[in-house]
Amino acid sequence: MNHKFDVEWADTFFPYRNQDDIVDNEFMRYFFYISHILCYEQGIKKSNDEFELIKLIYSESPNAVANRQYLEDAFDCWYNVITDYKTIDDFFKKFLSGFEYEKGKVATFKSVREYRETQNFFHACVKLYQVNNHFSYSDFLFLYGIITYLMNKDKDNITEEDFIDRLRTLRNLIWNSNSGEIRGDADYMKDLLCQVKELMWTGNINKPLTHKFNGIQTYEEVEKKKKKQEIDIETLHRFEDHPLIYGYVSGLGYDNLDLVGKFLSLFSGTPDFVNIHRALLAIGDYRQNDSNRYYMGNHNRATWSQLLHKSRNRNNFEENTMAVLRSLLQRIKNGETLDDIINKFISEKENTNTYDWRYYFVKYPDMLRGADGELTWDESNEYICTTLNKHQFNGQHWNPFLNVIYQNLSDKLLDKDGKKIIGLGNYGENLNILKPISSLAATGTGFIYYHQETNKVWDVEQEDSIDKVDRIAFAIEKIKKIVQDNMNT
Image (cartoon, rainbow, N blue to C red; front, side, top):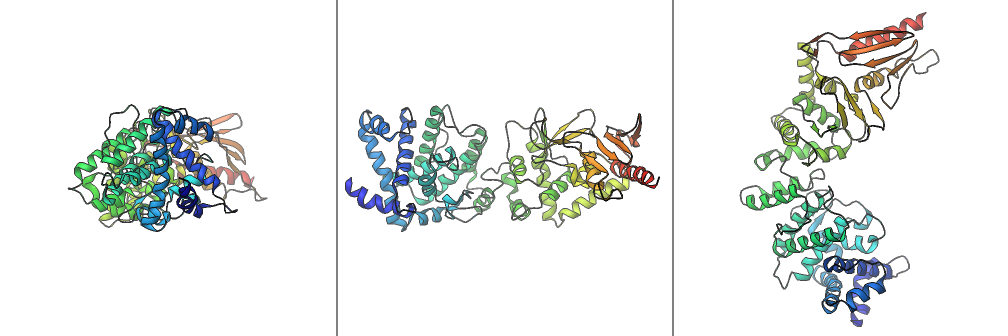
């Protein structure tokens, strides 16, 4: 053991030394990591005191001998990696990629510098474990899966092909268990570690446990194994490794893998999220909803990641979002562009004078304001809705029609000193006009204009509760005339 401390393990940790060429902290972080695995597995209270851990796990425990062997093997396995792959970085580089698909690898999407370009989870562990949340419980479990393979690959005859296949399944399960399935509670971690071990040893993911990975993703992984011989597996993996998808493919469907190429071209690089949103709405209502909110995609990448994953808490994932997305991808595959789809829809609506709610969201990108793509909607009238900056309603929120009018006029209507005449607050206020002092409120049938002690109803013509006139263009022209008349007096 002393020889391993001085030679093998010293060689293992030396590349991760600090600026003083010392690896004590890195060594101890890995010691705590392995010890905490044993704490979870054996129901031992987790401690951050190394002397207490030595006593509880490696001295007084009835499993002390086996625990000491596990600890030794957990350190040895990385020295063996150096023997087999030259460096630990080379090992991770062989099996993991960052944010793009590479054949024979699994994308893990880590951008924190401690993971390095090679997605080195060992390096991240020895630098970050118990330092900050950049080495999360998800990373804890993922590294455990890798260690389980390294410690058992020879005696259990686990091939590299088996390893990368199971590691991909593990990535999919972990990255899609983001609704409370993974947490640091001892009973949760005990069951999850057991599930990881079973997967890496045998490939089985259906072990009966109280706490498991996300049920939707678990079902999908079982289905993938059944369909493995029937589908284009490389296309499937290419889709799985997109950073908006990270393993969840059921939404697109196994019968639609021919659309993967168009999805990747549409959503890779710097996607035009706003026009994707507009094109989707031009095809159909792709919104998802829960009991209080409606959800659409906006300029924020996170909104699309949420929309592209089925959730227990949202409705209309398949019926709305994915059905419309498949239609969009098919039309692009057939030669149309986003602009073609958007402009065709707008022209059809304008030519027939049918301005429904979708028309306004497609025509005017500023209808969807806020960070999270969330809205409330009045079920009695499709023109009464509110866009939210964040999930809570007491935060910033706007009427989308008033916001478009504000965005269109705020830099155009200026007084003689160049100051803005139009204003809009961030908490659902009416549109304010300073010349003359007045305001505008949105209603289900148009607007109400308030001036001094009077108010005027600005309803637009409707047929079957659908606008026959573009109410935004209508209001803009009326406001411009009111302001111009005031400025001329």
